[in-house]
Length: 301
Ligand SMILES: Cc1cc2nc3c(=O)[nH]c(=O)nc-3n(C[C@H](O)[C@H](O)[C@H](O)COP(=O)(O)OP(=O)(O)OC[C@H]3O[C@@H](n4cnc5c(N)ncnc54)[C@H](O)[C@@H]3O)c2cc1C
Image 1 (cartoon, rainbow, N blue to C red):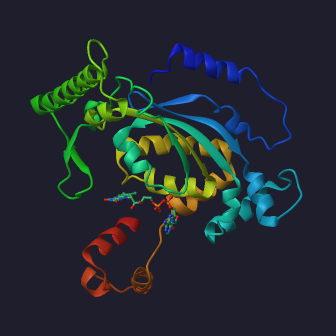
Image 2: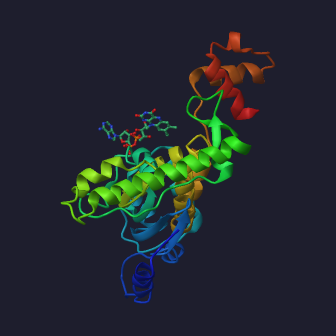
Image 3: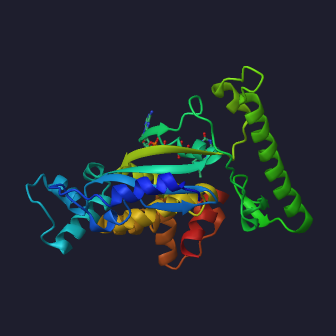
C-alpha cells in the first residue's frame, strides 16, 4: 500500500485533533478512524466516519430516550431477535463512511451494491497513478473445472512466470501509452477523459463509500463469503473486522444467523424430517436437483 507522506501527515493531523461530542461513540471504531488498512498490493480501506453503535440499534427498535446500553444481555437478546426475524430498519440507524482504494475490476463488482452513496476519483479531472494489481503467485490460479465462476489449481512453473510477466508488461505498456497520449510536449495532448480508455482493469481507483449497517451486512454476506472472488473478499474481510469492533453485538448476531446460518427450503426440511425418522433418503427420492442436493449435503457433511 502506498500512502504518500502528505496523505499520512493529513491523517496524523486529523487523528491528533479529537473533538468533544455528545454523539454516541463506539470505542472499538474510534481506533479505526482514519487508519488505512492495507488490502491487496496497493489498496486500502479506511473508516472516515460512522454514526451509531449497538445501543443506537436497540434505541431505534424500542423508540426509546435512553442514552446507552443498560442491560447488555437484554440488548444482545433484542439485537439477535431483530436479526433472526429480518427486522432490518433498526440496523439502518447506524452508518459508516469508508475511503477505499481498489482495482477497477473489483470496483465493477462492488458498485453493483446500489444501496450505498459513492463518490469516485475522477479520471476525467485527474491523472491516474501508475499502480496496478498484480496477484501474489498463490492467487494466480487456473479456471476451475467445476465452477464456471471460480478458480482452481494454482499455476506453476513457466506458465505462472509467463502470466506474471504478461500482466506486468501489458500494464506498463498501457500506462506508457496513457502518458504519451496525455503529454503536451510538442503536441496538444489527448483529453484525460479519453486517454483513460486504454488503461487495464487492474489499475487502481479510489472512492468514498457510505452505507448503513443493514446494507453493509448484505454486502458482507455476499462478498465475505467463501464463494466471492478473492480480490473483493479481502476487502469485505477487512471491513468485517472493523464492524466487529464497531457494533460487536450486531456483528455477533450477523455472524451467527447470516454468515454461519443457512436457509433451508421446504423440500430440505422435509428430507431432514424423513432422515431423523431413520429413512435413507437419496437425491432421487429427495425431489431435489443435483445442485440443490450437493448444497444441502454441504450443510451437514
Ligand atoms: C457470487 C456472485 C456472483 C455474481 N455474478 C453476477 C453476474 O454474473 N452478473 C451480474 O450482472 N451480476 C452478478 N452478481 C451481482 C449480483 O447480481 C448483485 O447485483 C449484487 O450482488 C448486488 O446485490 P443487491 O442487488 O442485492 O445489492 P444492492 O444493490 O445493495 O441492493 C440491496 C437490496 O435492495 C433491493 N433493491 C436495490 N435496488 C433495487 C431496485 N432497483 N429494484 C428492486 N429492489 C432493489 C433488493 O432487495 C436488493 O437485494 C454476482 C454477485 C455475487 C455475490
